[in-house]
Figure 1 (tube, helix red, strand yellow):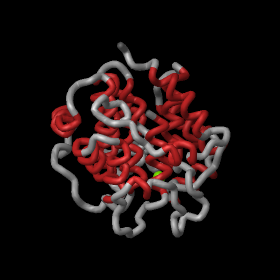
Figure 2 (tube, rainbow, N blue to C red; figure 1 turned 90 degrees about the vertical axis):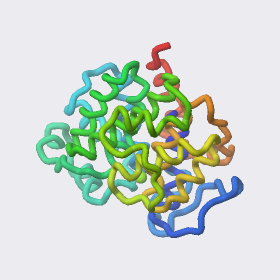
Figure 3 (tube, rainbow, N blue to C red; figure 1 turned 135 degrees about the vertical axis):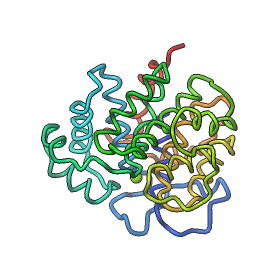
Figure 4 (cartoon, protein in one colour; figure 1 turned 45 degrees about the vertical axis):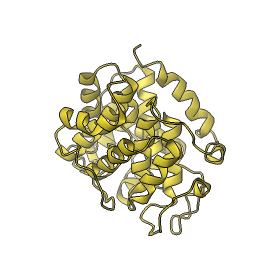
Length: 280
Ligand SMILES: [Mg+2]
């Protein structure tokens, strides 16, 4: 699940807010250099994945699920492997901040942007809806303590939960999310994706409901335009848990994903651990 999300993130990173004509064939599914974000090389993942690693590692550690431990994981993951892709202000904040106490004392925590939703997927593997909602709310509140910030995080993690626990078909996903989280999640999203959390999640729900292959889904996510690495991260995480989806990610995207200390092999190892969270 994390691997597919990271591939979505890394592929989408080449197209984030880049005007393009659309990607309509699988041979275009190769990592590309973003024209402005030169530090993010083709195949590198961004903030979406790095923060998802933080959330996943805390889930797997069994440590208490609280703001302090969550902030500490965000800092650990960033400082051990600093990278771009974060919103500029938040990147500066992470760079300067060295302790969870300082993080919690100084964070401007009322964002309604997509940061809380893009890292929430792994929470959806927990065994019941109530717990998923609670964990998503706690993690979102650390940085996105706003109605939209929290609801988009809950919706994102519930997308994974819906498929991991076989609640229904991909086409029913928008309706199910809508009946479990405040918002207008069953309305198909057709606009360019801006920075708000509800936009990325709505686009991801729309795309997941209307595709049935991971390659098609990835193209669809990118073709919204705008903040597409986040749409692809959220959508790929959920669809990778669906039996209806053909898992046809081109090999070049899998092998081309960065594979340093916290790259592909590391992510695959976390995925093995995360799969054990699913109550069967
Ligand atoms: Mg990103």
